[in-house]
Amino acid sequence: MHQPPKPYELAKRLRAGESLFTAWMGIPEPLLADMAAREGFDAVTFDMQHSSIDLNATMRGISAVNHAGKPAGVRVALDAFGDAARLLDVGAEIVIAPMINSVADARRFASAVKYPPLGDRSWGGNRFQQLTGMNVQDYLREANSMTVSLAMIETTAALDAVDDILAVPGIDGVFAGPSDLSITLLKGEKLDPHHQIVKDAFARIMTAAKKAGKLTGCYAPSYERAKELAAEGWGFITLVNDTQMVRAGAQAALKVVRG
Image 1 (cartoon, helix red, strand yellow):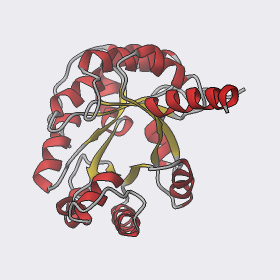
Image 2 (cartoon, rainbow, N blue to C red):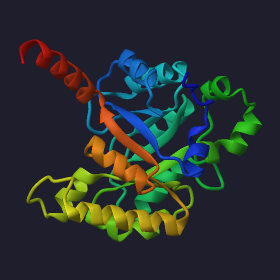
Image 3 (cartoon, rainbow, N blue to C red):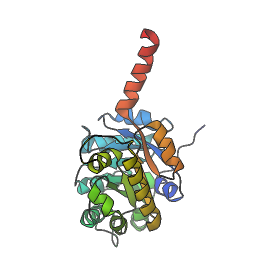
Image 4 (cartoon, rainbow, N blue to C red):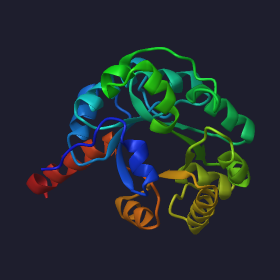
């Protein structure tokens, strides 16, 4: 039987070089997150940027995922660095910030989610004590390494600044977004996350992360591409979202009975 990882092991697994597959949640229903967590995913991530999930739903979803024995991640909304810190307080282990296009953006993100000396994260909440069993001094000492901050690289500006973004203290790694990269690199002509120009950008991002000794993550545009990305060494990989899971199940059942 598959044994769930211990709480706050996600960062260790990524730093050990594992490729981890996460479910991606956009429907504000904790029961769906709980169901996904009880499958074989390595983590469950809540998308607050492009979905109807709000802060309250995300907090409840994180608790459901933790209860199922899996780590929870969050992609916060644009510039919502305060929400990122609050969600770390209630048990998120990885936070992804979209549209980090400059060193200034990266510094603001790191400042919100890392305690001094790396940032200025404010102290508060006690949910982490229940989840980790750690006293406050031990948590304060270990929190910066126990949680993961990934800056999204998804524009031409971010791609040009990727080395400098990765050099910002408190930024643990980068997360590549293929859809927005395709739009920006193809100058708005079309959406094509499988385009060679996107694959080249991914290679550039991976090279920069390896050089900096930082972590990587990305959204896989297909299951087959996810397998390729894992073989290439990408760390935190989005495999499928909740809408896709529901639709695929419905379509598979209906195909059998209706042909």
